[in-house]
Image 1 (cartoon, rainbow, N blue to C red):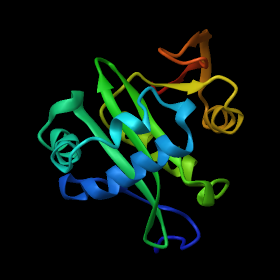
Image 2: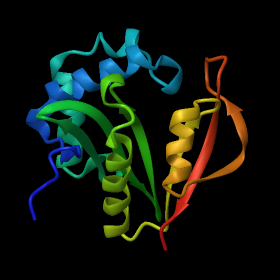
Image 3: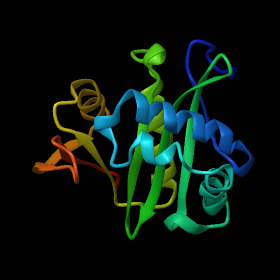
Image 4: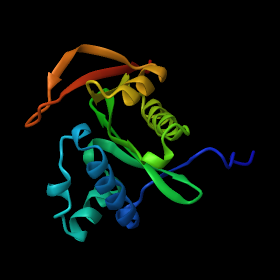
Length: 170
């Protein structure tokens, strides 16, 4: 069945895609600095070799069996999510959708890919943290079946809080 052209295409990022990953990650950090533990100021200083190594590590089996996904609309990268196995569960990190692609199913498509990836590896659950008060992201995660775990906790070095969420997979 042909892919619906109105739906985002999700693809795995491979080592030679490091410029795509770098550009998406830096856009995410500049656009939504409160949503991430890292900062644009720190990551913009990374060399090309460091960016390339970040994508080479999953391909070589490092990063606790993790894998990065990119979303594209009409061939343009507009979203990012990274899923990793951590013991018997999986976690999702670095979820971001470009402002021009929000509300078009990109976030849900990225999460679907992460859920499928985690289920294929027999993960018991999928975990993530969302910035408390980040209404659109939290609503997306809840629509996808994630539920809050505990109370929000302060983000390290920030004035914001993050909420842990979980999606049972078994």
